Image 1 (tube, rainbow, N blue to C red):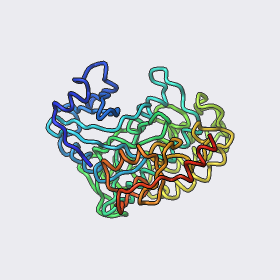
Image 2: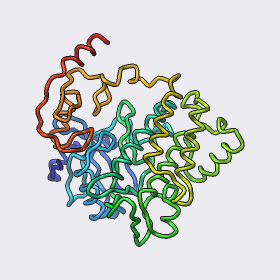
Image 3: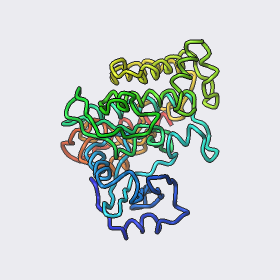
Image 4: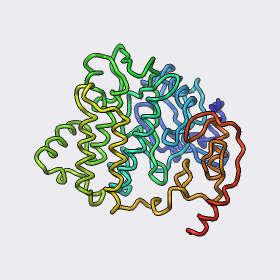
Length: 358
């Protein structure tokens, strides 16, 4: 549930917007790390002359307040007069910064990159299938994908998103918006967009996960490498040793998503099915959290649970995590359907199994 803060409250949360607390900046404004109820948060202060005007601000609030998903950033509140938004804090910043190892951050392994692709695709499909109106993002890109301390990914910055009148309908806008290299070519040319426009951007991101290079010219670069059989030469070696079969399949999926003609792009459901069948190709790698059985991981935190509890949706969560979630939402984190109640029951079977595993 969205909370409206006074500007004085926001100043307290962000320590008077101290330079020491600034964790990001751009043409849109500044982002500060803050503390709310002893929990780290991110406070985005938009420039009054930024592209994100009142309409985009309201759109971001409406989308993030209405929909909740483990791989979509959680909006906690804001102040419309000062154009400030308060989000959950994600320790590892943006996918773009991590791909390019900003501030000498360690590179992301190829397995984690694959997992990010699946997570972002899952969240994107959730938006495209939203009821009563599907949502098209129009500005999906690595800088709008944030990573938590375990490199779980979450889509953020949805100010350009639009509610669609129906699954198959294309919507026309006066002029294309978004970021050049990620904009659907048909959207640029004809001014209409639909869910396949996001699929194009997703394809570019898949190619960047493989190569960690600029999106400009990446389609030609990767397609040439695949056709000539030297894909391994352009892969980002800092990710570790890529399984050739997995890398080739991921490249082909990315190129298919990034087809110039919208009609030639695959349905996102089919893309996710293809991605999920690749899981076995990464078995030689091991993501830190994958050592634990999935049953032991909280769906919200993606960490091994200490105090597992069962919610009314039938899923098991870490107690503190689901309590924080329920303070902001009446919907299930897993299904987005309304919860029958907010009762929590200790899952002693799972806790006992976790204790034995440890």
